[in-house]
Image (cartoon, rainbow, N blue to C red; front, side):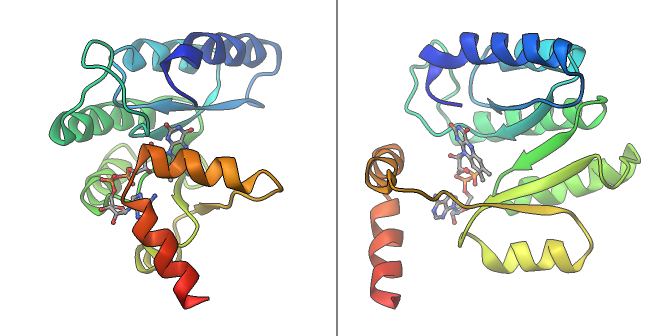
Length: 174
Ligand SMILES: Cc1cc2nc3c(=O)[nH]c(=O)nc-3n(C[C@H](O)[C@H](O)[C@H](O)COP(=O)(O)OP(=O)(O)OC[C@H]3O[C@@H](n4cnc5c(N)ncnc54)[C@H](O)[C@@H]3O)c2cc1C
């Protein structure tokens, strides 16, 4: 999911495709957007799988939560709702506190294995990735690849300047 200018058309397309091909379509939603609870309901109704992430763009306070605590609380509320829905649930975060909370929720609502997964970026929080995998949870690792790596890298750096350090460290490691 890109920035808010694309949200409506992306959700709308996913809903349309979801109705035409139930269970075969999935889309990312950003917990920081105020509109996301309503989008989640539209997508659940259309049986679209949902990747829930915090949101990576710098959006205005009118359309998105900007404080970390508010974004985390919104993520937890949306994930709780997603886990009680029939949609395939993809929990895309490296935030261990949230993951611990959701593991309890998964147990509480008796979410069936195979109907949800955790997702993280390649190389980020590897220990946590290994631990979840060893504990038997399904974990998908996001690996961007292709020729257009340079604009992709620049967009990620623009969203999160701290990525410059991670990038330079991994270059130095070889
Ligand atoms: C599989 C996947 C798909 C995504 N798809 C989208 C999308 O479609 N649209 C969108 O807007 N956003 C997307 N994101 C990005 C997401 O919105 C967040 O910006 C990003 O994941 C950081 O938030 P967090 O939940 O990990 O929590 P945070 O609280 O930001 O991070 C928790 C900890 O994880 C580590 N960490 C997090 N991100 C990075 C990083 N990039 N490099 C190094 N360490 C890091 C840090 O140690 C940090 O303290 C995606 C993320 C994942 C994992």
